[in-house]
Length: 420
View 1 (cartoon, helix red, strand yellow):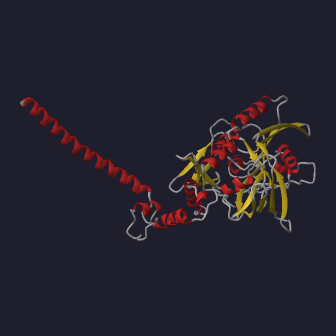
View 2 (tube, rainbow, N blue to C red; view 1 turned 60 degrees about the vertical axis):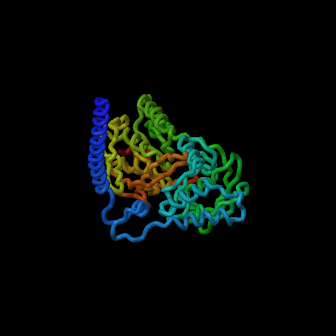
View 3 (cartoon, rainbow, N blue to C red; view 1 turned 90 degrees about the vertical axis):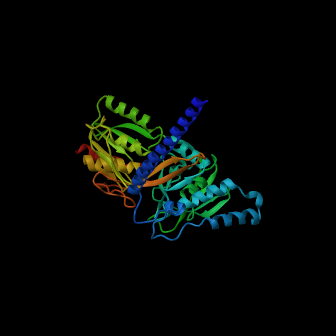
């Protein structure tokens, strides 16, 4: 009996010691976390997180009040005429979408589960729609680029066209696009194969807005296309990259292998990034690495850090003479490649000034199968330029003329290549 009592007392004492030891370790760990957090978080300004959690700095008095949010929710639940149309999940999705759109950044967006699925399908290279990459020019919905060979391209839409109004009888849409988020624009413009959508377009240099009718089709995007051209006694590789998607790496590797094994050997490469709206950030690093042996491709400057992204050291195409074709439809990742080749290797850019998208979006998957694209930083060219809203100026300006059968930009590119 005495032995059992001593055993119980011993266990009780050990338990008390472990409790206090855990408390001490926990306090030290907590202090360490507090130190790290204080180094990362702003000291002189309040944050939204601080307002929500109540951990405000002394100089900040006002807290976020969610009472009005729930007040409106309850009013809708009890007073809205068409009660059957109320969908709690859609209301939550709408509230989250409103939160991101309130930032005023058209590239920071929330995607509902359905929208997120369609976004992933597009990057993988197959969807139904008209074949345009959308963006904003001075807060107006715009064509960043029409994808080659798609209904939008055949209908004559051009990079830089402003989309003022959209009419779609099947979807019962007949409204200006001025209040649409990027997500809403994509949702409204996509639709079943064979259906018609009518855009009211403003184009620089044209006096009045005009309508363009486009019939939707399946959009299967071949992201890399290689053609060998015999020109003035030389053989030139015309290497066109239309976007940086899920299939680009495989298609690019196949094209590079053809270039290296070409017989007779080629005299140079025309890298064509016209109407390439971008896509995966890593795809730009990988592609540039086949020309740049060991240098910075791009730098990303976020809220707290700056990171340099260097070439991977592959450089399979580094010994071939090179020129790059760009235009107003060259944006984001394609601008990264063009800018890196210009700054690191002195490669000539030929065509017209690029679109000018110099921010980086991080794509995150959410617990509800939705997604969010968050602008997390600015990307800077190796020479230090931030080209957002400005674009990259070309070395040789050449306009593409739709009225002629000749591709004047490609022709000038081959000419520049041979005089190097």
